[in-house]
Length: 636
Ligand code: TTJ
Image 1 (cartoon, rainbow, N blue to C red):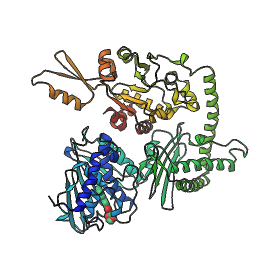
Image 2 (cartoon, helix red, strand yellow; image 1 turned 180 degrees about the vertical axis):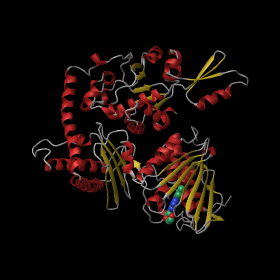
Image 3 (cartoon, rainbow, N blue to C red; image 1 turned 30 degrees about the vertical axis):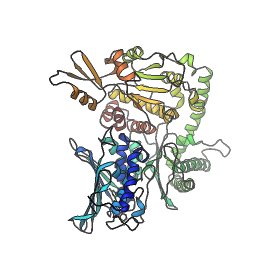
């Protein structure tokens, strides 16, 4: 161990602060925070790629959940940093917020919680090891026990002078990440794939060495164009080209890819510095504003609509639109409840300028495709007027009031919306035990029949025509669309309770899509949950124990005395349990485990869903089984 200097002491105080309040730096010490460590390190490699010096990044989950991230960039500088008197490596890994400041000029892009830096990872790890390949040498430095350098940086080996890059290995500290230190392959794969889509030609490899080896390579020559292609894969694109527009103004890089399809919803996803801006912001506003203006202008000039006709609204020109907006900004301001809204006001004009010029040119150069697009927008506008009439009619007939449309709801006694809950239960076989097993004072049960209407394929008027959905809306009490009022919500928690199987996942995906499309505020305000029914039943003697995952199963088995004879059954559905078992395992406030649905879960469900939109059921089912990453995540 080295002797401590003054700067060591300052540094260690900084890292102590991180250890004391990890949540402030990485959001949580649960699964999400654990994965955040990986993003902190990966972001550095992506920055090097954005600066144009790296085109390969590899992430390896080693045995024992050690993470290795390597890039083929220039390598972290290996000299001493003037300000700190420590090596640059040590500075980056031990001084809070040291990130780019010590790394020279480059194009530094970081955002949100990201970019708090490698020092945070170091503070929260049992150990971190850094290797740098530079000038034919391999440099090495190691940190232990939450951030202490074991030695100064030193050369440990020679390498080919052509080889450059940085490799970081770390092991998350299990005393800090008490919930879990096990990485979820699908979470890593999804985000790495997204990063690859957002940075064309960047090659990212993910390897899992823990059990049977898993490996994915993500590289997209077309970048976000390929992303739109994927999202529209199972829909009919109504015009030939995926429109792609890019431009740079005042160091702000804008890229937009879009294509209209034959559905009725809009799927506009925006990113700033590779971070999904779920809450939108100036880049999205600029592009949306320009889209409405340019389409109206073209429609008038080309005489699709008369000068004094009502113009097309934003929602008309976005119906059936799949669009990715990616903005890269040297100094992004993230705002909003979840810090996922881009705040930089100047970007509104920049994105508007770049996008409107590009779209105008596309429409003029491709009149055949322009015609198809404008006609689609005109139909959407007429349908909007018709849907409004239909909705007014429904309301006038008392269609959405409580008394007439509650369907099969078994309501609770309490009318206090701060402590009541509604379980949405699939199928009659589970509805029975749920009704018997509930706490009738505060828990209501709403059975739904199999697959609810796929809202992705229907306009609002048809959605409102669906009995199942009307019952749900009536039970919520909030109304829908323009009439939506969250203050009228009749339950504090709306809990989706489906089987722990593929059909269950599918139904949950349908419901999440429905909530995302029509009741977004309920998700944002944390009113939507998924129940976690048990996956296994362990029986021995007269005892039956239900557990929700493999981990709990193994933990329980290890508590049994040796020679105990037991039997393990994989649960197929909620209907297999009687009312008391269902209450104990899944419904009772004291013993159940709920998963709160966040906006990104719902968006992910929506996105997954779009990929699954094929007409054939079988391949879709298969895809869900193999790939419905987010859906699986919810299964934990
Ligand atoms: C900074 O400017 C001079 C040349 O090197 C630049 C740099 O720091 N490059 C760099 C850092 N490439 N890769 C990293 C890096 C990679 C990982 C995986 C982790 C960290 C903390 C940095």
